[in-house]
Length: 103
Image (cartoon, rainbow, N blue to C red; front, side):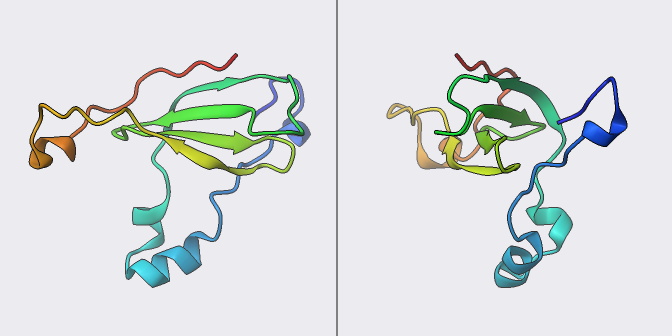
């Protein structure tokens, strides 16, 4: 999150232990990290009870939830439902998410 008023208020959201996950997957940290944020939406309602920020990232079909109360990745990764009319190969090539909203 960022502040346009004071840089001291800017915060980085944690993607959990990227180094440990990269080592387990035998990949580099850059391959494990999420790509740049394309769109972000948030809500202040009951922010202590559940994730209150959602983001979509470049070239990624998933939308990620975040807990702003402790600046961490949320429990849920949202994906579009599978289309039974498409074959398995095409399922893997889903279109990237480009917009998110939260209410």
